Image 1 (cartoon, helix red, strand yellow):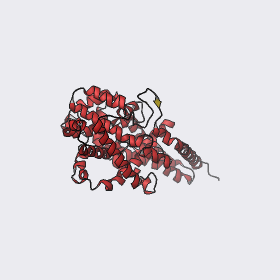
Image 2 (tube, one colour):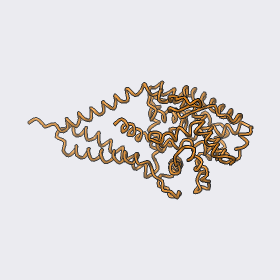
Image 3 (spheres, helix red, strand yellow):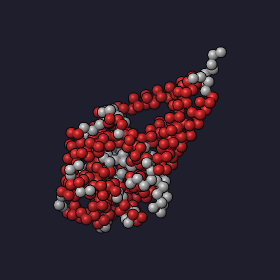
Image 4 (cartoon, helix red, strand yellow):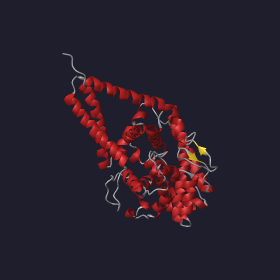
Length: 383
């Protein structure tokens, strides 16, 4: 039951097509990376300077396994966010192929950039603790708030004014697919590195991010969303609408209007999700949802923090290009094994630990209220 509630809320927040419980949204990762290459002259930077699109797609590819953040394949997400099983494994698979190595450089930059959000002292960790929020939902809300606050700060940067950021944002992951004039060798490498086949996941990520919808016929393999996502959306639609009709029709007291409406809302949520799957508008809907809390000052990133973390991340990205040394072991924010083979508890889990009491309390209260409403609805009327 606990897992069902997690998946239910996770579905409603619909991380899936954000494709990004990434520490910072994809566009921010692109900006940090382009900035670093624009300001560093080093062997690492020069190796990949004319392959910037490959670097950026390697950076973005690190977040594709986020689709498995809450299932048994979560290890793939940890892998692409770690130094050992991620970056070092990537370099081993790449061998002497410069293009593949540049994709690995992108993964390393992603790990480094995410560490300023997922790890202790990171932006998301800070705000989850500060506002007593849960990782899912709260994580995305902080990311989105950071991006919204950062946009006017970097608006005068040549990377933005020249249109370069918009350009690279519009061709995310194109270099990884033959259908978009890319090369599938990158997918082969990332599949080996992550331990799972990410071909479909990457196609879903790209199509969703670029707003093409999830039934795009460009790819040779049919795009399909995870079965658990469909099952929850369908269950919400059918159960919600069916129960509301039954309650409206067979209810014995005036409570039926309140009870039926509550279940009807559940059904409408499911229907909206299904429609978004078919139209490819899921990410747009999620964006609107997660923009609401900051309007009330909840999980709203301050301008001072946006400026501070922006400078920190840019400097760290440049430092990596100067030295080629990735000093971060893991940036998933989840429990992992470090280079000394020690088990390390994830910072995101610890950050949300104090919020679970109120979360499950609310779930319990909702369940009790719905049960009470149903009892009152079908209570025999007094003659």
